[in-house]
Length: 308
Image 1 (cartoon, rainbow, N blue to C red):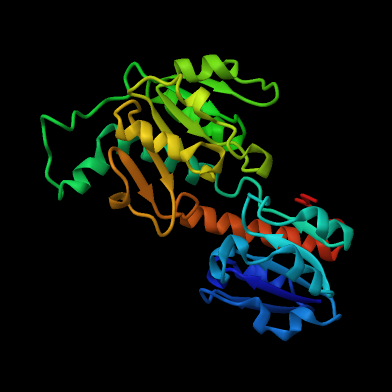
Image 2: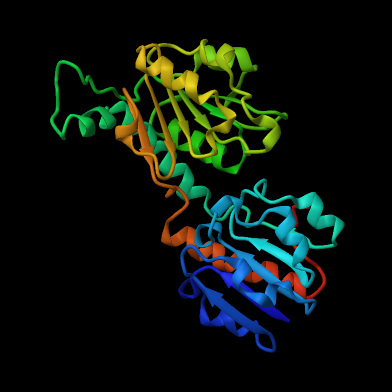
C-alpha cells in the first residue's frame, strides 16, 4: 500500500517507521503544498493519505468534497487534527473511504495554552503591546485569578483539563455541556453559566450547526469585566458583537487564535495568537504515535479512531 504523510518525519521514531515495512511510505512537510499537482492521488491504485492541514494550500479548505471524490484510489484519510468537521465525512463514507482523527493528542498543550491566554488578558498584554510596550499604571490595571469563576463551555478532555488547572490555582469552576457529565465541578444551565462566569473558556467541538450559538443574548449576560477565551473556531460566537462590547468597555477581553489577523487590528483588550495552542513537542510526538497506530489498524482491516 502507498502511504502519503503530510507531517514532519522527524517526530516518528525508528520503531514506528519500521512497522511500515512492506509498504511505500512517503513524507512531506513542505508548506503550501497543492495536492492537485500529484497525479498519483487521482489514479485508481489504492493509497492512504495522512494530512496536517497546515502544510496544504488552502489549509482548512484544502480538501473539499469534490476534490476527494476525484481521488478514486483513496482508501483512508487520516487527519493529524482532533477536529474533523473541516472534512465532509458523510461524502467520504458514501465512497467507502475511512476518515480518522487523532483524539487526545494535544489535551495538555491546548489546556495550558488556554490558561496562558487568560493570563495575557488579565495582565492587559494586548493594551501594553499596542502602547509600544509601555505600562500605563492608570489605564491598565492588572487582575489576579483569586476569587474569579472559570466557566468551561464543553467539558470534554480539554475542557476538563482546563477546569483542573483553574481549580488548582484557586478559581471556582462551573461548566455547561450539551450532555450530562460526571465531574467534580458545578454544572449550570446555559443562562446561569453566562451570568456567573468571569472567564469563559470555549472548548466546544466546532461543528457547523453550532455557528453563532453563543449569541448576543448570552454574551450580554456576562459581566463588564468578563473574559472570553477560545482555542476552537470562533464561529460559535457572535464575534462582531464581542468586539463591539469590548470597544464599549462592556466586556473585559477576548483571546483567540487567528492568521493573519494581529493584535493591532483590534481595539481594546483583544489578544490574537497564531495557531499555536496544539504546537508542542509532546503533542507532535503524540500525533506521530496515533497516526502510526491508526494507519496500521487500517492496514489490518480493523480501523481505529474512525469519525465517519
